[in-house]
Image (tube, rainbow, N blue to C red; front, side, top):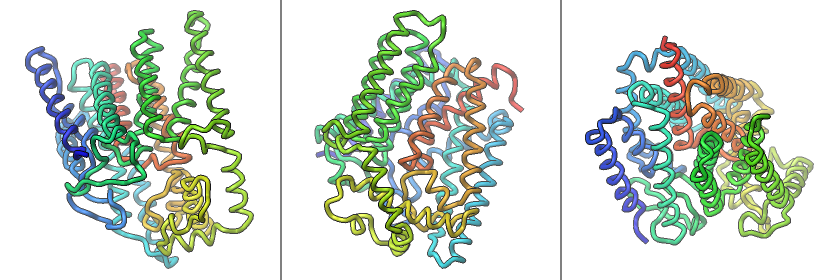
Length: 461
């Protein structure tokens, strides 16, 4: 087995060579920030400075340095950061950061050992992810035909990630690098993860691909885009991310439903209804546990509901909260014989979050108590209370409205809107708001839509 850096570096050399060929030989107007952004969103996470020894990915990373270079370049362009829609986002983030700091000190006042460096890093990460919106605006203003270029780059990136993922599935390369040392997790064996932090992150990136490629197919009617949609579903299957598979199916149904018009050709309507029927049937089979397909065979919503009901009835949530705050690991707390340990682990952490919300409903107990938790809505309620959750949803809802209004002015607008919907769906079960590559990619595309629509309307102030 070789290091993941070997195929990654090889593919990046090919990409950079192709970029300069387009830039100089074909005379295209392409910003140098474009390959930097591509590299940042493709390379593995490599810690240069470790912040929290209990969480391997918490630290100052190589992609942080690349992001800083790009942000400095973007800020020097006055049109980039003075767009009112960007300033509103920064205002939301400032208020959310203040609420998070209050939450940390509320938690410490309640006697909880909040990890201050980890909490501050989490706040800074939100600003770093949002900084990609600035980079997106910059690319829209400095790249010829920004919508088409973004689609080209995204398609290439999707292909590169598929190559890395397939190499992992057949056991050619490993999964991650921590501080330049190869990292191996036996539970990830033969899963497609590419350069992401886990199979769920890569799975959601593939959901982005479904949103983008399906919207392009519905606009162009070219079968090649539909083939890419199918390829993304295939890679989700190889990633074994159950949440991503469910989100991808729901996303496909929603996009097809909302794309139907009276003027839609009959053949396309038949395709849409056929696809909706297929995905609904598959969803029912998965949700009821009627199929036995490896890791996907243990999806059974009725069993999940029963587990949650039993947990609540037994009064286990405060007990879970004590174990989480005492640093007891999930593997130790999960009883032997549990059919789906991942679901039980969620209930284990959610118990601490719900108990924290009960004690401090407005501000929660702070980010550093539970550190890593799936399910962003419950996580935000526990860590930052109702104020933190409303601030985040308010910010996210504002940008969904911005993107939706810009869909006729900016070509990627419709795709980006459905990418945002996918994050809302996935956040019920996984930690999407803190997933670096998916969130950086999303904010980059949101900024691109803002920049393209602003260039069209002249709204740059």
